[in-house]
Image (cartoon, rainbow, N blue to C red; front, top):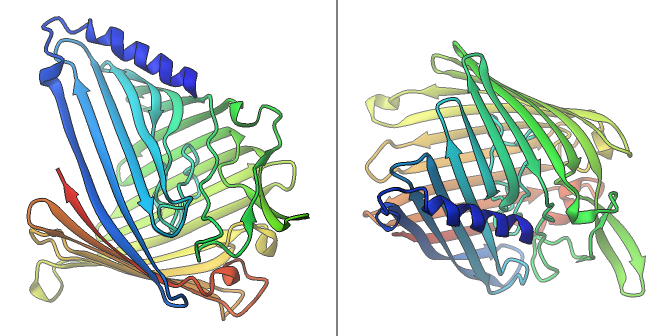
Length: 394
């Protein structure tokens, strides 16, 4: 990782000399946010408070096709020591032409079309201490070449360093009550293993298509319980995998039809998994400016009860209400029901609203409902919580 950072600094240093008019300082844009939040757990007499901040510095050249972006993030948490962390979300140099571009450094890449899970999204590691929904990602060291052609876009990735998933500490109710041990790896190169990925994407009429291939260290660890002198601990084990992915989205009027599917091969078991469904939007409900989106998605995993992923045979039903007002008010509610266990489900609500020109208030609530000890979410049955955050943007 240090070598990647050093190479990125060198690239940026020399790219400054490519700017003929010496306008480097004038082409710098700085923005960011800072805020605080509180999380309350219904089963515990504790409040989890935190403060956080993110800053982004972007430079765009005038006389050459170069840009550079740095995004730094940090949070201090009162309860979970693992949630007190800092990360380089982005440290990326970009050079582009009309038909291709290349990026080098640390960056974030998103693949996927579905709402309730992103099965094909595998470039970046999940920052699970930030948000339990898996949407927050750690920055990934990479070299990314993109070719833009009339028949589609091709992305090739070299990923020279692996980052372990952040996991809640024993002090957090989002931990199932076990200490997390040091990770072990299938590859003897451990975090130094170089991964590779390739993706093709294209839009044809109403269809958006993505085909991907990944070879390297799986971003999702297998959490194996181990008994030692300190008691029972969970040991994250990172497999070597090959994964093929498919994304399809069709836009048909008010309908969005979505599919994400993967086939993965590893030394434990080969399997296939998919998420498929739709979003139907009711425009201007009750003659107002509000839009209501209705979401339904089905999850299937060929490993069934042996899967590490809780979404094995589940149904997601949700609704998204967008006010389309000056404050960007929006609500999303949903339930994920286990179709093989009627007593196990996950329910959530997300809401956000801008306050004035500089502030945003957001709310996130989650309920983990299970009476079946064999169910993966059973260990979180007492971790129901509501998070409220206020963010100042500058």
